[in-house]
Length: 532
Image (cartoon, rainbow, N blue to C red):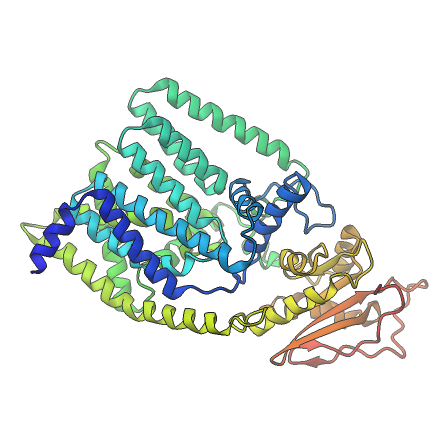
């Protein structure tokens, strides 16, 4: 019976199997669906950029007081969101559901490429692992560019496998417009065309890439581009650690290699860790390397892209490492591992492949079950916003941001840990406060941004490390505007007072900040002019 079922599945029309795997993924993603926003700032930044396109006719970072041209994220994903907003898809749940549909499309495209690229049995096994990967299911419903980027990447690989150069080029550049991480894919397409002696196409791709690069560089001139400026920092979230050189870059690569091989890869594929899981991960990736080497005699776009993409991921700062970065190459890694198993003797490869698929599915079952339970709890809890599935620290931060809308004077700006979040929920622009305790840095940033307010929160250890020491050292420069508390966690909006005219730090009559749960609360109320 199992053999008969397997035969039917491996001989079914590719389009039907792609649809079937997409349906399996949709079911798993629906059970894991969490309607709350992602806790990172990227999702609200994308939505704000989409609103900028719709409401201002330009690509501007509205959350910044300068509201200048945005030059960090490519415009592809905000343009998709702008289209959704234009037709009335504007609240969190339908927008997230739209991304789930794109994730299902990416699964279907992955299978179509796998089927054209390898044998039906390998395509089915790898496709099933991708469709049910816990990390893929969890990432499917976030409003981030990773899912559409994955879909565009797989469309490019599939069309390239069919020698459809125009389609491969088109989707390669579509991926680049969704994420700058699409650069390795476009370069791989150009190299693939050159190896096929399609010189005009190859030169055209490189020429268009050069034009886009020049235009984006000109746009970015004078703009704040955190990814570029932060690359050489040892830790973008702890600038005081300084920058790295060549030796530091090598150490970063080795650190990232350890993170991805013995953690992130299996987090994405099976949602599990431990020594046994590390052995599985190392085995799969070792076989991937073997399979990739065997394919170099006649490489396709996937084989050409993989080392470029992996190198890019490994040189990024380790704090940026994430399982979602591996989604575009997960099908590639799996199919190359299956083909690498051909070095094993006799019938062992087919048995090893089948056993690996079953083993990974069994290992991932607890993680999937956990995702389903969490999704059900969050859907039931989402009766108020901010949802109870968000951490209380972030809920307090959002509540404070929402409170500021229409309460602060026109033209106000706020320093905070998450300026994109603060703007999205409060419509008050601002910048991040400096991650340093250097004397005067906070006040210099406030002056540059035209900000008279700063948010003291509990979002990680950043505020206690950088903001609270500055406040404690200069309490006479701060006053209380408003505080919001959620489940005992507090976010406080403080006013920044001018430097005393005589330059003296007279704190008589003013309470010094007292910590309660890590947040300073005792300040005098701000004078007139800090509220409407």
